[in-house]
Image (tube, rainbow, N blue to C red; front, side, top):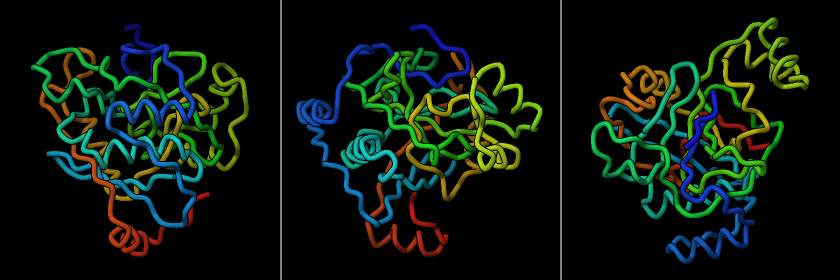
Length: 254
């Protein structure tokens, strides 16, 4: 598999499969993963990623990225992610996980090519951009920018200056970064060159410091950590999600 420079990647197992929501549902059924139709409900949708070194809690935005969220939630509820690892990370960039091959991978085994047999259509919104702490879908370098069925990443990135953002606009993006997004990239930080290229579908609301902690773990070949960081992904029950939303003062999703 060719690695695109500074891009989250997923495997090339079935890189040319492109499907719409109906096809995703049919393929999911064939794997025992029946996808529900995304609901545009006001209920908070929160996932907790538990690892052997700490927890990360993310609010999923099913209004802005309904298909991607529906896919992620169904995989999580079926236990797909349990026992998998964060198999790749780069400091000041992102941490990536969800490769099904990572569950039984031997030490030093190359990871990143595992997948689940379909892609998910890209969903881009200005409200969902690559500030530090967002959760987004990895993908192969394909024209449609369709996402991996299962691999995802959490953005770490870095803080930018106005001069750095200006150069990025001129030399790489070929577009203007909205003023309100620039302010976030100048304070919280992130990965602006990935905007409108990878589907963002939520953001961390608790445990954002764990991204830095995981990203600091020693890595070996192909940016794979020397010591495995394994995960369990749980979608919170409505009552627990509402309680957490209230305690954190989370705003309604755009």
